[in-house]
Amino acid sequence: MKKFALCKTVFIFTFLSLLLGCSEADTQQQMVKQAAAIENSDECHLCGMIITNYPGPKGEIFEKGSEQAAKFCSTRDMFSYLLQPENKRQAQHIFVHDMSKTPWNKLNDEYFIDARKAWFVVGSSKKGAMGKTLASFSRQDDALAFSKEFGGMVYPFDEITMDLL
Image (cartoon, rainbow, N blue to C red; front, side, top):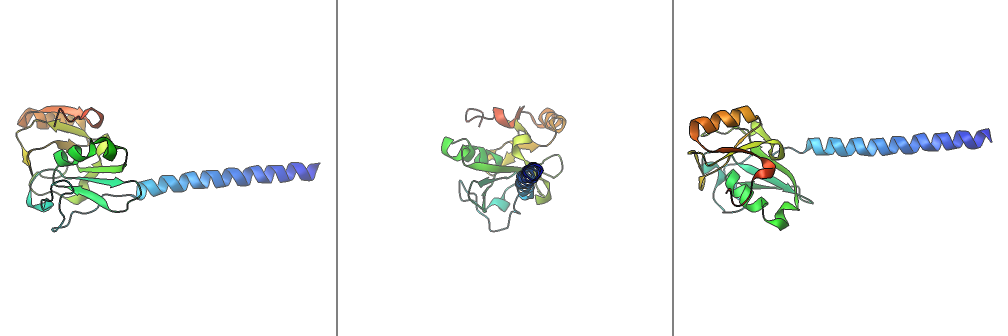
């Protein structure tokens, strides 16, 4: 009877260790996914324009089952693509530039942030690749300060709709 209890205990601990190990590995795998650097020859996934030729924040989407990022010349193009139902379901990781940390006309790819946690200014006077675009910020306070200076309204990611674009 003691052997059975011991075997049962060992089995349970082994099973739990494997379960926790897999869960931890999945979390680490998700954290490893980073935004890809935008290269001089990269074209916008939506419109085909050369991304680096234009000012303002850019966006990237990693879809399920793909290691390559779909890169966009503006956050507006990114949302235009993302808000299509078939694309929304496929999006796994979404990144945008943090305009709290990088200048509008000289973006730094070290400052990509998770778009789902970002704040967006819609309707500002600042121009991107296709005219007006959405300014993206990691901090709501920075988004509000930007909207006071350049106009527009501040929205969290989940409230961006095609009507706002």
